[in-house]
Length: 184
Image (cartoon, rainbow, N blue to C red; front, top):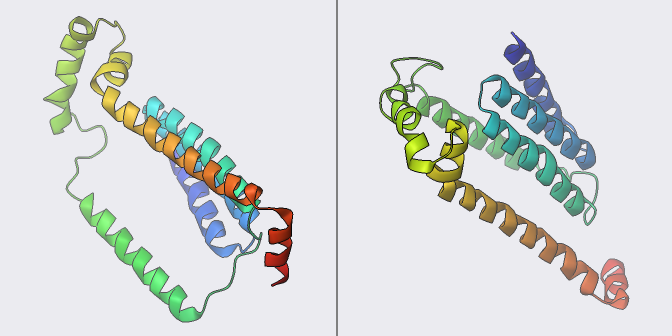
């Protein structure tokens, strides 16, 4: 029941984000959306994904977007209706493809799902001997998914370096050029 309530809040926030023109409010609502998503992951027993969503989605992304917002205007520019209609069509088609892609997935918690017959039993039975850690979750995250975690770290690092490069570029310009650029 709580998952349905959280998903309802997320739907309301998503609609509000699409309707609001104040970009600061959109960034704040995006952080709340990510935090609610993290709570849903924790309730679904995916604590590692929930922590990642909280750190990256609600934390780092919000800070990076606020930093970017400091360099731009706080109001969204209104686009012509034709471009808006094309965007809506693209979103609907993408959503339909994503929903279609999930139709053949097993139901959540299905004991007959392929993952419960091949991968999970092996991790439970052999991870302690192979990795040397008594906790199965820690052994999976630290060893079996080590490259995945390393890749996620590189993605976050690259995003941070990109934002710092953008922020640093605007600070390196002499004040005279910035004033002339604003007047011209």
